[in-house]
Structure formats: C-alpha cells, structure tokens
Length: 79
Image 1 (spheres, rainbow, N blue to C red):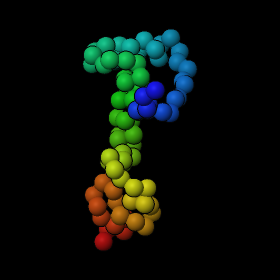
Image 2: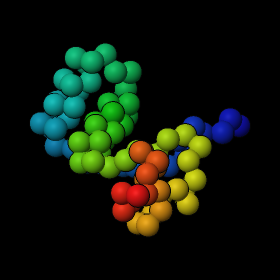
Image 3: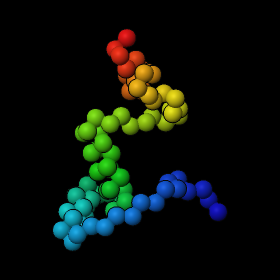
Image 4: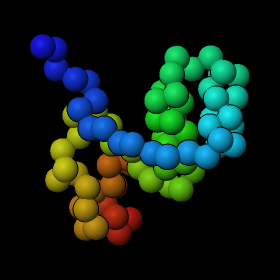
C-alpha cells in the first residue's frame, strides 16, 4: 500500500450556508476538491494571523522563543 501524503485526518461539521460558501469559493478558483479548498483557506488564515508556516526540511529545533526566526533567519531578540 502506498504511503499517504497527508496521514492526519480532520473531520469538521459545516452548516448548509458554510458549505455553499466553501463550494462557491472553491468553484470560483477551480480547486480540485473541498479538502484542497479548506487547506488553502487554512493556510491563508494562518498567514493573515502572522503564523510562520514551516518550510520543507525545517527541524523543530529551528522554532523557539529564544532561537532563530525560521522565516527571517534572525534571532527572536533582533540580534
């Protein structure tokens, strides 16, 4: 059996209005699936909130209060 690219599953419940809004957004952008649309909306929301998304091959040790900033490569205290 092939290895899953996204092994974590998340189940959400949506109202009829939320589902229509999601599908309208998805179809307007020609997204291949609801899951792809939800992942894109989640990514956009996180970026809008200032959450740094992990780059490929980043180690968890690159993230921390006193360690370097993974986005800019600078120390958290500005040095």
